[in-house]
Length: 277
Image (cartoon, rainbow, N blue to C red; front, side, top):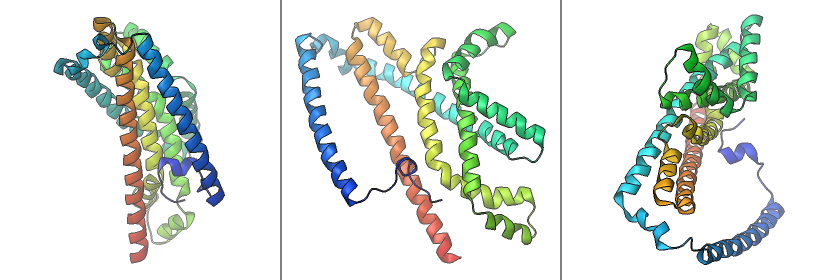
């Protein structure tokens, strides 16, 4: 199994005819989208949505500072949730691959449970149920923990897939050299598995980032919550949501580029190691 970007895991390499058909279809879609965009802008103009009062406040530094504060909270929640989900996912992956049947069954059950329950239900649980038990959490953790728990099962399966993708012969060779199972896993198997699943982990980071948009439920001052405050202050729903959508698109684009760069780096590193072997 080779390292690649997120797209490499989703699509096979197309042939010449497929690329030509894809190019034609892409051109037609772009023309249709351009026509649709023109029609939408015209409708905005007709209904007065392009009026200056709906956009003038974007020229104020306070508006961007307020959105920036929300964006910082969103990124912090997404990164913290991703670290927690990776840690929990790693433990669940190790548990599912244990020989002990009890540990394996419990880990598998948790993985399937977290994968099957919607993130929103986890958020409601931490927002409504947890406080009744006397546990007081800040709004930040009421959104971060549910997003992390919701993602940990997917992370666990991604890591398990990476571990299983490492050639079995490497394990057998290491055992023949006297490696213990634990040392074998952490020094030989897992480093290679990470190379395989980096794109999948970044894709899961994107999902965690999107899940943080539920933060308004727990009154966490993230990007979406601050956007709603601006909407209530300026009565400019369309313009603010368009700007926020562009911000999310740019973040996801940068994450995809990061995935591509990491995939190329991993591929080059692996090729260099093989040439030295």
